[in-house]
Amino acid sequence: MKKVLRLHTSLFQDNSVSSQLVQELTQSLAEHGEALDIVDRDFRESPVPHLDAERLQALSTAKEERSAKQAALVAYSDSLIEEVQKADVLLIALPMYNFSVPSMFKAWFDHVARAGVTFAYTDQGPKGLLTGKKAYLVSAMGGNHEPGQTDFMRPYVKLLMNFIGIEDLEFVTARGLNMGDDAREHGIAEARADIERLAIEFSGNHQPTEEVAA
Ligand SMILES: Cc1cc2nc3c(=O)[nH]c(=O)nc-3n(C[C@H](O)[C@H](O)[C@H](O)COP(=O)(O)O)c2cc1C
Image (cartoon, rainbow, N blue to C red; front, side, top):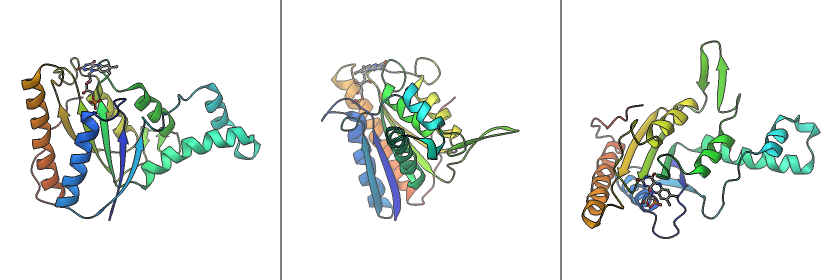
């Protein structure tokens, strides 16, 4: 059974396209592959706090010297890291906000990127420690953006994932969602076609996948 961590980062309650597509991807993967053991982290229900000065101080304090409050702050960050450590597969629902990721996703990553735990500094540069995982980045955007031009989200998330050692990445993107009914329908249909293709690949029938330019 594959362990799956799903991150829902949209602020929309019931009509998030990225969350809906992650749900559809989950179903397709389950239909085409083995059983999935799913953990959901939904930023709408549990907003991720910024890694502020108090939290950073708690992390920098030796374990045996932490106050009860500091221990609780560190335990929260630890729980986010453990969810990723335990997962074989990450399904990340990502709306584009202001040409990049939702700020809570950045906050989540600030908790998860921890030297010595999820990455290490070596004499060859940083090395990701969360290897052997696969991530699906399911994004939704109102407009039509190309990676590296007006889309700073996909290249950035690719960099973040690679930084902690997750190099096996797949992208599903619904574009043009706020550009009228036809464009929205087309954007969702393209994303659904990618989901179908990726689910077939997941079951072992391998075909080449889209690469996003960094
Ligand atoms: C705060 C905010 C900022 C947004 N910024 C952008 C943007 O920069 N570019 C874009 O194409 N769409 C932008 N949108 C539109 C969303 O990307 C679009 O509504 C998408 O469907 C959101 O994903 P979701 O449906 O999963 O929540 C923005 C929406 C919000 C709420």
